[in-house]
Length: 112
Image 1: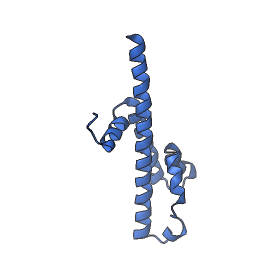
Image 2 (image 1 turned 45 degrees about the vertical axis):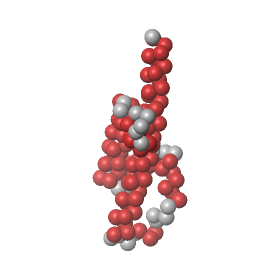
Image 3 (image 1 turned 120 degrees about the vertical axis):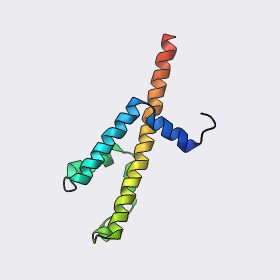
Image 4 (image 1 turned 60 degrees about the horizontal axis):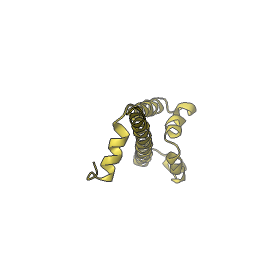
């Protein structure tokens, strides 16, 4: 795995254990609920809170009054927001994966 590229290693950390996959499943469910019920404030904020702290950097991107008209601009704004949430989710899942590997490595070393 030393010769693998950085994105491939991060993707492996984000998907190769139950903790990371569970986190991604919960996040996917919250995004689906947010898209299905866009008027609910609590459901709409769940993906942002689940991908914190990186997702809060997306607040600086101006997706406000200029995108209210609909059309192509609104679709691009939604795609950019979901894309950023995806990147944040993969980073958080990779961190959880690294922590899970560290804990399992310590357990194996302790019982050896």
